[in-house]
Image 1: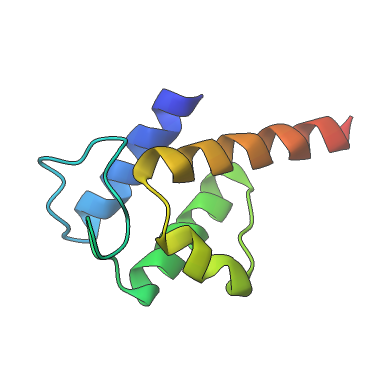
Image 2 (image 1 turned 45 degrees about the vertical axis):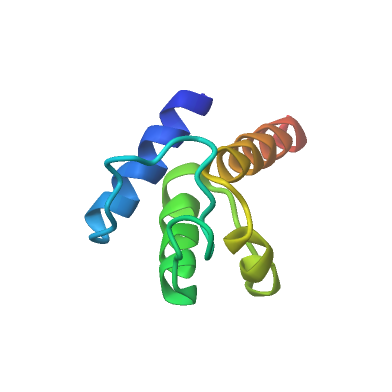
Length: 88
């Protein structure tokens, strides 16, 4: 699932007009990398929620912006797995 989520995140960034030509899993979302604005982080969070049913609270957005692409992917996969386990 991780590869699928990473592809989804990179595609979402591309659709938001970010240059993803050199983006890797180690690329930071924040100032040292993509330098996502808070609105962009919120937009990705909404898309993730719509696609994977994983919710990020408003007070988590600052923390999310400090993650790398791989860190965000791991967070999404872990939360999706926890939600699936809780639903059983």
